[in-house]
Length: 170
Image (cartoon, rainbow, N blue to C red; front, side):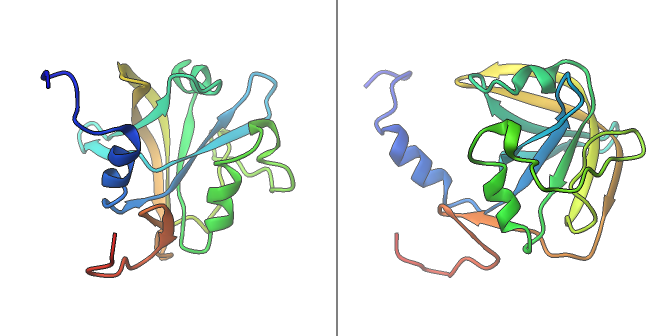
């Protein structure tokens, strides 16, 4: 085994990562035609308080990537436990239809937003991005943010839940 070759496959690695519970976000922005678009992301975290920076990642093959690296604002919508359907909606199917039937809500600056039912939201501008394997790591500078009292939606071991069972079988 060489240092650059892992002794596991990607399915095993994914299962290992699944043991870490994460929050669920939908990141929203606008297409060039002005229509809102979004994508479900669980690879999200804080980076810095001063300046206020967050980090998330998106596959390099995503056709939405140029929208998030172009300099335009986007919103990190931290989903609440009541928004599992939104998590699934923005994770699957054509991105052009994910907003179908949803209200066209915008921040004060005009960026698409999923509403007050979210546990929290942050409006960001791209700060930096870096290639990392098959993903691009994006760092956003937070310009506006708010939070409510709703509990967050949690993703753990391939499912949504709030309290992963202690000692649950693999």
